[in-house]
Length: 217
Ligand code: NYM
Ligand code: MG
Image (cartoon, rainbow, N blue to C red; front, side, top):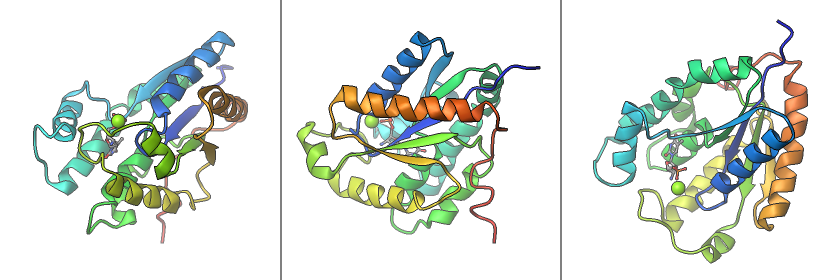
């Protein structure tokens, strides 16, 4: 099989940073340049597990904090066979949130350690590139009110931002910080440049395992 694998590209950031907009624009740009690309998002609210998560986020149900953390992780694991198949077929996957959101949001709750939160996601397909859309709280506030979902308060989001900053210290992950305060087109240009670079490099590398080295010892 001489086929080149696709790259796993993740966009992360606090709520309202523009991840969803930028994921769609990236997929479109890659497709237009002849590179197969598909978008995915986590949580994927369409599966049975995803429906439990959706009800929780919409405040239609309550779930114990550890339990919902493990459901978010399970919602990623259930997509792994499909993700691997697509990557092997040469499709580049552009993913709106991944395990980093999982850890940042749960560990922003009292009593949760970063390493406990990371453990269930150890061994997931490792992204070739994780772009963090950086937006300070003042700029985020200019983008309007939060929605009605759980976690969408400025106090909580500040803690989430701090947890993301801790995760970004991990040198085993290819993090790139993107200035999300720029206009949509300039953010898109930065994201596209990093993505093309990652796609070229990924072709010659095996897909890695997330956090397998990070949590040793
Ligand atoms: N979220 C997302 C988590 O708490 N854990 C996770 O593992 C993931 C992937 O869900 N506030 C949170 C972050 C968001 C919320 O995401 C829903 P979105 O992108 O607004 O659908
Ligand atoms: Mg949202």
